Length: 124
Image (tube, rainbow, N blue to C red; front, side, top):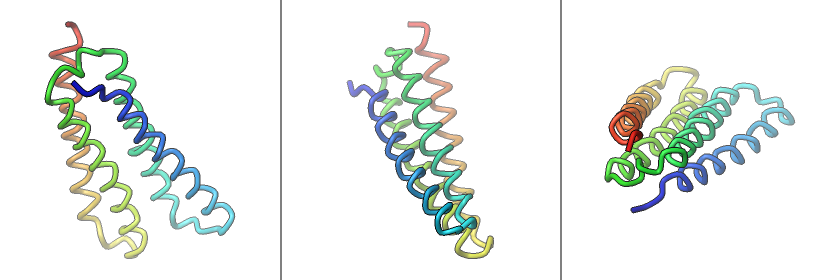
């Protein structure tokens, strides 16, 4: 089975680097309207996905199920959707919220899958 800990951490680190680059751009160009996008990159991308990776690393039994594969893709697509939703929200003047809402629902699904895996597989 695929070890999802490394996959989650790798994607999380990619979001960290992109978020830091955007943070530098925001500071130097004084484009503070993009702070929401930066926050989405750092929290939804880096923090959440890396935390999932650390959970998979701490409880390797979670890697032994097909739900791990689904949870990886759901969480990764949700983070991407939240970042692009935040960008759309910023660029549209706050009128476009649909993508953020859909991505947030997907993120919730990813968290529920992670919780279910933890509750049912972590003891083994």
